[in-house]
Figure 1: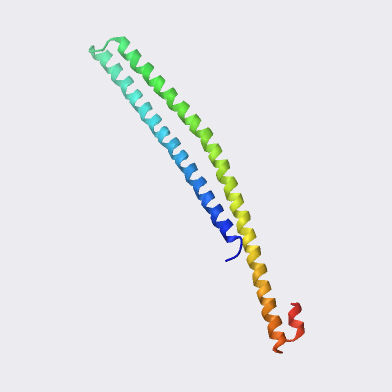
Figure 2: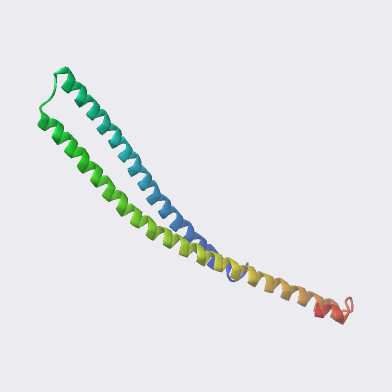
Length: 143
């Protein structure tokens, strides 16, 4: 295990945590979008029923329709506000995840370079030992 492996492990945990946070926020945005679509369907259905009721003569008082549709508009606005807040949070979480991913990649490169240097040192040491006992010639140490 090289000296950078612990750093790689810690940065991997940080990157995974940031990715999970981003995923949760994006799931929240998706849920709000689905709720907004449901609200739109409900509003369209109620508009259609209101027109049918007016045509058949068994209509509710107009104030009830107005209140219902005003409430739907209010709900729609609230959902849009929640969605926009979540989108801001998602952008911040995305930046945090990207930063964590960049740090992880840097740590992985450091660990890889350290591993290569260690292996190169081990090969040199082994070649030097073999040269000392006369198995290899001095020219192989230079390679």
